[in-house]
Image (cartoon, one colour):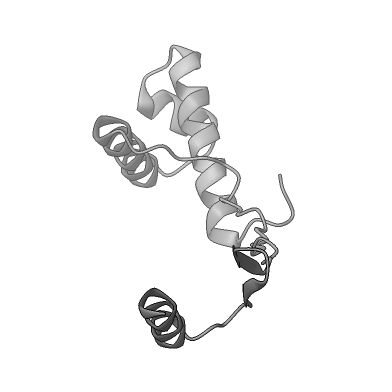
Length: 111
């Protein structure tokens, strides 16, 4: 058994193994429980849980779900340079004020 599993996960895994062993045994539920010293009512309850999960399409695993770490990196920002004719250049840096750029472009259009 996986030592990182909780007690309830270990218990669930044990009962799943018991129910699967019963299916492979060819015995009746009562015979299987008697031979393995299991409570018949408890066995039926666990069998019902697993049967309902399978009917609903619930996928259960012995291992808990683990998430992989994710790193998010912003792409490197490069400055934008606008060349107007040979002698005029506008350089726009990260975090620029869009309103100021509009005003500058408006002035350039009217010049």
